[in-house]
Amino acid sequence: MKKANMMISTLSTAILLSITSGYSSAEGICKGMEKSSCATSTSCRWVKGYERSDGRSISGYCRKLPGKKPQSTADNSTKRKG
Image (cartoon, rainbow, N blue to C red):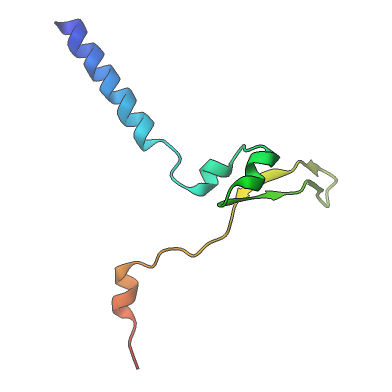
């Protein structure tokens, strides 16, 4: 019985962690994507590789597209109409 309870507890914890630690933003989804996958994504874009001013070479990478942040209701209540 103890083994069964421990197994259920461990499994429950693993499921909870996998749900809560998943990708929470498009940035997480885009990170590590290959160029071909990134190009077909609607929430990501491919950044070409480049060389920094200090001479370090940066490889191309996929990044999240810029977007508007959702406005909170607290921000709306402080605005005045006029």
